[in-house]
Length: 339
Image (cartoon, rainbow, N blue to C red):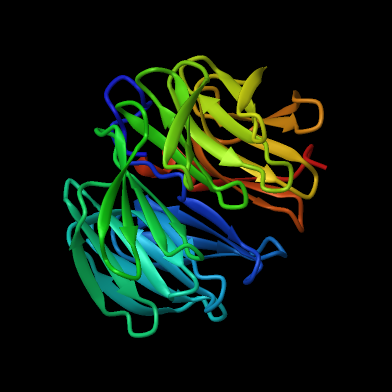
């Protein structure tokens, strides 16, 4: 999410997709803003840096074509990498400063929001041709490829913008409150989850009924993640230093887990039922046991962790560090103490 006054540790842009793991390539990709590059880390731990556009913010992977897309804000473009060779095979200009990015693997399209712009850039994955659609500003994008829908979240609104990928029609979907931050989809349950900074709630949107209810969370709920295996929903409460655990079947959030200072990102290891939480202001990652809903371990994570990715095969956690914005280390690998 873009930095908001009084809610973030920095005035720079940060993005939950600054580090991602791709099971199809077996690699982790992490932005390196200071060097206009992306770090690519293999399963063997070997890392290499690949130059992309200036100011890389977010990464998305097409799990079918194995192409990797890097949105670079300062350069106003998206770099396209071959997931096999790691080479940049195309550079696609965007409407303004790209920020959020998501892939429709069925249609082979890439959706890119642009900071301080009302334009959504759509990239054809086959040709790398780009078109722009006037959708309004977006800070997060979720694609439901099977339903043919793209959901756009804007911080300064109380509704989601919905793009029908077949017809191109735009519509609005109430999210229940102003100042929206996190967005996650549980397609099996037919629900969207939206965090409300303003009222400290989690909005639960029933996509079939087009109806929204709220679940109490904590102060300044930020990131939200869904464990598709268990149906549980995890909400990081930036202001209260907690994680709210919501039962996806009942939409009750009775379990509150105390974590570190200003939690801001969540990643789930579904194989081991472990939830990793990045605590931005105390430089740690909390590991929550999904079965007991208790903190299992708290581990050092570099300077100001703000995004997470989990490689379930190697049981390593990869952390994007805010210190990278001023020339510090771009990412931290957590392996010891995770097993």
